[in-house]
Image: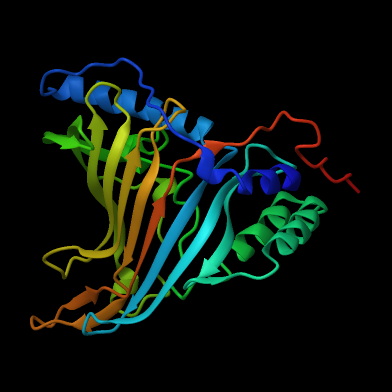
Amino acid sequence: MFKRILSLLAFLSLITTASSFGQQPTNLDPGPAELKDLVRRAGIRMNEYKAGFKDLTAAEEQLVEEYDHQGKVTKQRRISSDLIIYQSQLDPSAMIEYRDVKSVNGVAIKKREARLVSLLNKSAKADTVNKELDRLIRESRRYDLSHSFHGMTLNQGLPLDEKVRDAFEFKFAGRERVNAHDAIVVEYQQVSRNPSLMFDFAAMPSPLNRAQGSYRGRLWLDAETSQLRREVRELVLQLPSLSRPLVLYRFEFDYADSRFGFLTPQRIVMATNSRGRTGADKNPELLLGGKITFEYGAFSRFNVETPDASLDPPAKP
């Protein structure tokens, strides 16, 4: 694995992209049955994304910002990396984001290649998947500030997943142009609990630690292919004493055409409303505490079939 990762780093800027689409035209505003079928097709496209989003790499620019109670930026960090979608050598179905950090605030990371070789060698000797991947995840987050997110490129369209889809209500919300493509806008709201969508707010200050969490948002689905071109997702807190839910996290996902037959991430923004206060109405409010913006160049796939391209799994004890 580490040999093929090293070999691709020098060629990231040489890859160009082309567009590829399936054929699923949707010409009219969907009624209830058509909307249900549109969401079903979008779920299929999402599964194709998950299946295809492996052995991919792209240049990544990350901007991390932290804010005070007045909404002013108190800390800022720019991190340039090569994002590598790493498959476990013990379990190929397990994938993570590995960030080979090139520079922080414009200062190049010294001995980067040697550190990467050492890290991958150690991971290859791990006897469990968790141990193998944990080293890579911790290394990827080494330069993060207190606000850190991981794994957001690996999955898309949360409410489209068949395991949780029944927990959401979907509504047609119009049509818009997204990156010169017609898109059908679908609004969603979580309306029931699901084991895969459980939240633990026990660590939050009272009275928010008794809140119920739920997701809401919008999907921009390509009118021809049903692929997800954009999503805005919010995790909100609800309390009987509040007249409106409080937004804890807000995510924005933008996807671009690629050469792989599915859309790939172009920009991801995660905002955390982690600063609390009591408002004029004596009710709790949440203010912006941190924001992370990821921007990606064109994705490429490195060859996994070449000789010596991967490491053998470690022998079981």
